[in-house]
Amino acid sequence: MRITACKAEEDYKLWLRFEDGLEGRVFLGNLLEIGAFQLWRDVREFEKVSVDPETATVTWEGGIRLDSDILYHDVKANQIQHADGLEPPAVG
Image (cartoon, rainbow, N blue to C red):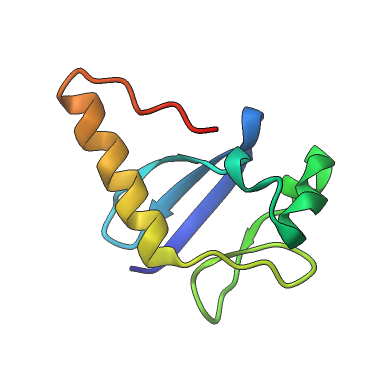
């Protein structure tokens, strides 16, 4: 699924909009301890996210890219949990 828009939010959350109109947030703070993602410890680096116009996925300087299909699944799963009145699971 192609990403059409994104925005970094506080606490390492990323808001996404997909080509089918689905919108939502994913928490990415759990990646901070992994290799290249350590760059995000400086929140200004995390905020430099953009949508790659060629691949329609999110990307950061330094070559970090996240799979749009996995992000779509995560956003969809978060919406189902909220619709059921359940809080999303704590990550970390």
